[in-house]
Length: 180
Image 1 (cartoon, rainbow, N blue to C red):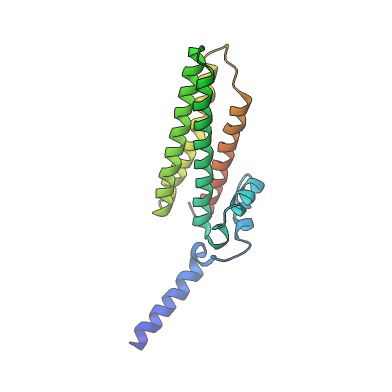
Image 2 (cartoon, helix red, strand yellow):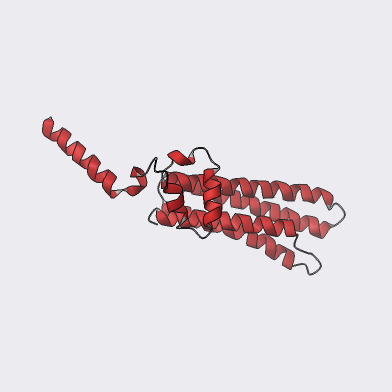
């Protein structure tokens, strides 16, 4: 029994010394260290610090928090677009494009939800793929406006598009830190 317990302790020590993802819980500098691996450091830090579970999270937990930030952005943009459709009752082309865009942001939310499942299962390659898809859906919305020469891409939508893309870029940087 003593030898088995010794092997168990040795295994734990090796496991936690090899796997920094699990051994960094409670590290007060983890947010800053993790965000240095992303394109948008300030966005990363401010988003993660605004979540009360961040100080206790490991790197995978930080990725999940940022994915949830992205989901909130995609959902808010979908809701915004749905409300805008009501204000363009007489413009069928604009209404059609707004509907297409709302659908695209809904798909972005779905892709991010899939990445949550992938991250939880430690399928980082699939998580990466789903986050990349989520980041690309706003392009489809923007391109829908380009199909109709008279339509102007709303500045508010451009801001939201950039926001989701930046959030997704942060998530991708964190996934990279996980060893993807």
